[in-house]
Length: 114
Length: 110
Image 1 (cartoon, one colour):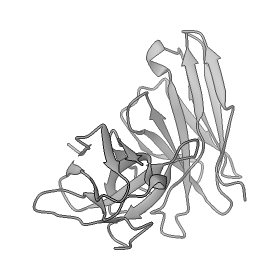
Image 2 (cartoon, rainbow over the protein chains, first blue to last red):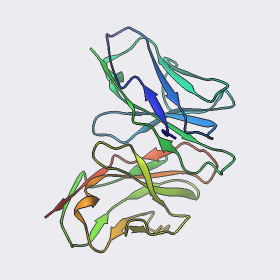
Image 3 (spheres, rainbow over the protein chains, first blue to last red):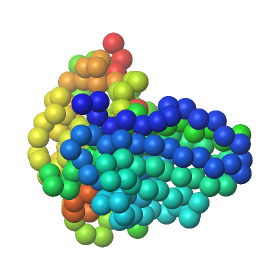
Image 4 (cartoon, one colour):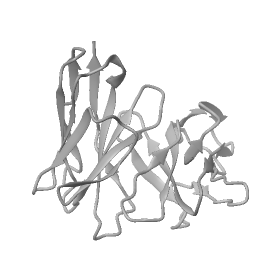
C-alpha cells in the first residue's frame, strides 16, 4: 500500500488561473480532508469529504471547492488564483469505520502562484 | 476560539539532554490532543495522542486541563529526534478537522 498519494508534486500557475489537485486515499479509507500549509505555518483545514459530500469546511472562500469520487479519491479545485494561495496542499485520509481518529497524510502538492 | 500555540519556533538541545516541546491550547470543551511529527523529506505523521496514553519513540505528553497544556517530553534526546513537531487538537469526534499549531523545529546537537 503506497499510502496517501497526491498529484502533481509541484505546480506553477499564474494569478487568475484555476488549478486542480488530486488525492488518492490510503487503501481502506473512506474520508478525505484537505489542508493548506503556508510557509512557516502549520496546516490549516480547508474541507473534508465523506460519501461524496462535503462534511466540514474551514475558513476558506468559495474559490476553494472539492469533489470526492465513488472510489474515495478526491480533488481540490481553486479558482481565480491569488498570490496568497501559494502553499503546500496536503491531503489526509481516514476511516470512519475504524474510528477515524488517525489521519494519514500525503506528501503534498507544492503550488506556486506567480 | 479554537487555537493551538507553540511558543518556540526552534529548540536546540544536546544529544542525551531532556527535551520539552511546549504546547498550549484554547478550546471550549474537551478536545482530543495530538502531536504530529515531520522528519526531513518525509510526510507528516501522527506521533501520539493523549487518549492512548502511549510512549512513542520515548516521547510522552500529558494533558493538563487546568493549564490547557499538552507538552511533549523525552528524557534523553537522540539525533534522530531532529524534526518538525506540530501540536494539534480536534473535537472528540470521529474524523473531525484537526487544528494545528505553527510547529517547533527540534534540532538535536551532537
